[in-house]
Length: 423
Image (cartoon, rainbow, N blue to C red; front, side, top):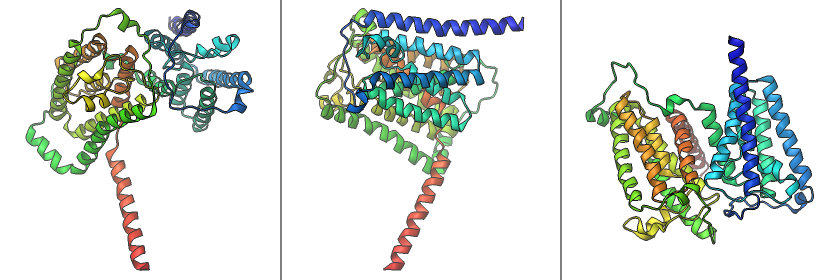
């Protein structure tokens, strides 16, 4: 019975993998003659000498890729790993069908081989490599893959085979696939009889005794807030024109502008729930939670400058100060609203089923309203969920940061004393 179960798992895993390849081939064949938009690219690399060896370099990259993949599977095979490799291809297909952008088609004879692994804003090629890094504990193997990712990205950029957003997205997707479990998405009732509840007096006391942690947390949060308009200014100054890709859901659903206003109202409710549940049930971790909100918008500011997509709607009507609002609404990929909403849901430590379920419903409602109001492309929403999950899972170690700053402060004081002695 056990052998049959293992055999069935293997069969299902390889079915996911091969059907994923087949679906991407079908997508390639359907869209290869379609006139798709090409988003502007921040990372433009062009070495003329490499263009003379285009086919040979690309084939070499893929040979090394398959050798790495097969070597890993032979040494550390698991049906779960194969399923994750297949899931990557399916998610790449979903991203591309949702919001298709142009892909590599310089040479029709080899385009199929290279494009099915690099369609749109997710690259299954790089996602597979990042997955191997997350799964292995061998430092030499990890470093080798990192070096290979660096050099293959230069080659791919040189031949316009991949977008910089694709590589960044692939990292988040690999992290998501490695760490995801259904328990994160589906809240369940837990038999927890005692949950420590904090009061506002406890919060004031915690703030008083952890001023340094709150100082760094608030600064990271403010950095995220400031980074958004700075990225907006960068986009306006750097890119003369951005383009609006087609979007399956946007084309199917009529625009309801009021849905965008409803999304903003719900976001205020989510902010209140975040503050309430964090202070009430997770006070010890509150500085970390604040810092992570800033990290979401720092990540978004980085993402939106890589391959900025045109606004679906004029953002100037949103907000009281149009000039300022336009800066905040520059760039689309990914959705900060979605990332924050799902982060608030995932980080809930109240053990209150109703509260957590409410946060989940509100998160999906915000995502739906952003689509209905034509405020975001579908891929912005999908990537926002991955970004929210990433920020939730990582840990900001304030003690480590404090030790580093203390050492830096001591070094600065020592240098000043030496300089004074010299004088």
